[in-house]
Structure formats: structure tokens, C-alpha cells
Image (cartoon, rainbow, N blue to C red; front, side, top):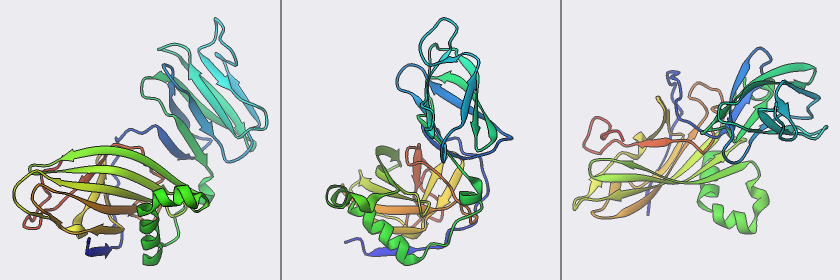
Length: 279
């Protein structure tokens, strides 16, 4: 049994830049910003999603079907809130102007081997000014829902509205053990990500760690936990499960982070005053 369940206040964190790449992006609407959009060209598409109906689109070398003077293919139906794009050649580049809610938004499209798959744009007045405080009971409910995700998905799918799931299987190797991130869930309304992880002890000795000090890293940014369920012990040659969640950006605002990212879990050994060798 994982006996230790700790609920902590999310600490104020320094605002480092995030270098972890992801294909599922969220950004606030800003008509004074040129959005850089790495666009699919080898396989798949890149989709831009707005909060509601798009009024009009403009682009110099963007067409609805392949032609000699087109660098990008576009799929759009008048009245829709989204537009789908694909580059036609490796070095394709253009600007797309989208008229939305009587404002013009500019997107710099560049063909990429690592494209955005979706970019969701949201109204900053609704989402960007901050987030409501989340109670310990809400965090426990989120954690329980993540643990029972498969059951909810088959029997009560309506209960998973606003929940994104990624089966990641990211491995973070340490000296005597490995942390495997098996599953990541994002609960949009609570701006919370839950990580279902496994501690794999490769040694013949028990390894103790501090559940209350588990944290998550993305790029150069470290996110402290909002709730954790972990035993604090890795028996010899064993695999033990644990759960850790992060909420918000550490300063009272939203993180708007997608689960599909290159995450690392940071571990403090029980007899260590420092982080175990960072993966």
C-alpha cells in the first residue's frame, strides 16, 4: 500500500524559459503578436483552433488544392472555428492572416519536421488572468479519477470531459533506478497534470526517497507537486507505482501545459540532502 499521501501548496517558482517541445499547444489570443507555427509537411496536418467562428482568411501562397504557386494546402469551411494546414515542400514559408472577432491575427507558417499538431487559442480575459484555488478534496478527486481512468473511459466517459490522456512511457534513468512516466493526464478545468509513474529499482538494496520532494521538470522549469501518492521506498529489484500532480504555474496563474511533452521526474533520496543524479 502506498501509505504516504501528501498535499502541498504550489511554491512560487522562477520564470525560466521552457524548451521542452510539444506538438499540442495552447496560447492566448494576441493581435499584436506574430505566432510562429512549425507546420506539418511530411505527414499529418497542423490545426489552428479558435474559441468560435472564424470570419475570414488571407494568405499569398496558400491554396485549397495543390497548384504550382502554392506552398501550403489549407482546409477551411466558412463558419468553422478551426483551420487545417499542410506544407507542400520542405522549405515552404508564408504568412496566414485570420480575421476573428473583428481583429486580425498573424501566423508565420514554416514547414517543419517537428510541427505543431494543434494550436488552441483562447481568450486571455477568460483564462490568462489566473485560476481559481483548488482545494485538497478536489486534488484527491482528480487523483482518484486518474487512477481509475480506464474504468471511467469504458463505463462513464462523460465524467472525462476536459481530460486529456497520453501514454508516454518516458524513462528517466538514475544511478541505481529508473523512473518511468507511464501515463499523463491533463485536467483542463483545474489546470492540473497527473503523472502515473513507476520506480524501477535495479539494485539489490532498498532505496528510500522523499515523496514530499518529488517534482517535475520541463526544459529548465521545475514544477513542485500539488499532490502526491507514493510509498517513499523502492524494494530491491522491484517496480513500484506512484502518482504526482502539478497545478498551475507556481505563481497563481495557469500553466496551460499539454501532457505530450518531454517531462522528467526529479527524485530526492531519503538519505540525501540533494537531488539524485538528474536524468
